[in-house]
Length: 172
Image (cartoon, rainbow, N blue to C red; front, side, top):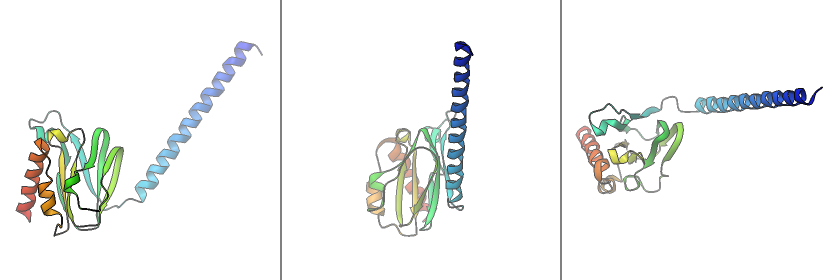
């Protein structure tokens, strides 16, 4: 066999091995994702992260949907689309003491179960300055209510959070 043909054959084998390895890697990731999805709470409330550049209102351009959620203790929320520029991060002063903080990024979907009553404030690290915040009210009584009210951030994020707190007060 000539050196040229031998080199081409080795190249073809390497290419085939590369594609086989990639196919196997993709299949294992897909399998892991489907197994993970299978163990998720089927009753979780889905929270989307929306980018709508055609929106006329800055608060609608970048937003969580829904932005205000009331749930019983033990309920799970599924945060979708924490990819690219979108993140899901706890607002530190709007979070019950002793509860692990949220910090989601670069993930298609993630579940958070709320096992303690209270008010939970979320923001997007990148779009919070445009008012991309969310409020979760867990249970009927919120031990951290006063601290959460004092912990509202400044700027558009704070303005939007005050709107959500007012909406919550109207439904209380």
